[in-house]
Length: 568
Image (cartoon, rainbow, N blue to C red; front, side, top):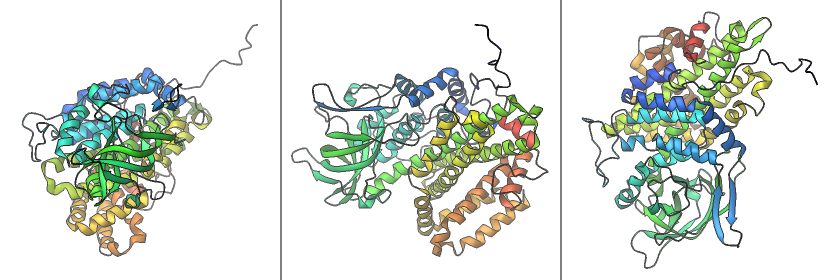
């Protein structure tokens, strides 16, 4: 039957594929060089090419379309407590591990790099090279634009290393496995693999973020030696349950304590690590999250007994960095999709990207994304600074919480606006926008909701007032370059004088600190059209409450061109 021509496809953008995600992101390229990671440009370029390929995009689609499946028993009735993933998941995991997204700062030491921290039993390789956290952040930023799900186990594995440092014997045993760039998905004891992936299981149904309310019990294992315990209890969220080992919290005789739970006991038998069900999550669907039952589960103590929160906070601090990076990357991925669509789609007689109101929206998306990129890359540099000078750590801890709070709050708004730029095409599952939209809220929930983060900032500011003063000093690096910013920072300093007693206003002051930090970075390092538009719209009250309300004098074309960076 002859076609009537009614299905001829016109005015549709080509797929955004087979381009380099790193090279086309000018803000990221410049930030990587600026924050001490220039030696990692080749690595980022290589991963950027893979992430932008049609092959990786297809892997991401398949890994999310075919969600993980729980198998509690084999066909004979034996408990196996295993999660089966689509092969695309394992391909993505191998890609991320192969590029050391999970371990780069602990693997790399450039010749001549200062080593201020004590060396551990692995020969000191856990001391990062200058700029190594910046390189790792850039790689994670790219990988998150390929598939967010695999970046969860990457973040937890990365953050396990500083937590394990509290127990040198465990660090010596497990860190070399973490440093491996070989991914092995077999469900076998870790001793039989070159590498290892870590998960975490902290929260319980009755306490959530209040981990001190945990009821899981830890009893010393008779005849097993010092530091070996048996755990009994239930964990409400255990992410990446097929990991080789997990860090978890339980109530030992001396109080809440951190433990390492391997999937297999030292004798090679499967540990009593029972998967009750998988969570049917809104997003992050390629990555399994489970409820876990401990029933005299074999575990080893990490750090002093009763000091679990202090021990695990090293892991939380590093995973918060990854949460901020992930949220910023989601924003970038969504903004690029909107820019791509608008450049190739025409409406009302002109390309969408040439229409003034759409230009305003796209430029605003670009501003928000570049500000987030600058913030997370500067934050990563802070981790490098703290590695050389431990005195910088309190300020970096404060800055991490500020960045995590603000970027994670902005991500859902940015993705929703970017999706609207695509219209109905953005709302269907054939493209990546629904997946990005579902992913956008997760980082605001994981590792501390907004209120938890703000309360942490209050406590840090009270315990370490020098850290808050140092952060204000960070804001003043741009002093004199923009009067609007100088005025804004001055008002913040006045507000901080009474802030400690105003818990109900914590979100307000954290938002202001975050905006001032982003503006300071853009004023110092971004082109004038970007910095000017950001300060005008975010600091003076002239911008509206929605994206796309930039003032009439904004150079939207220049901002859009920078954000596009030569992508196809």
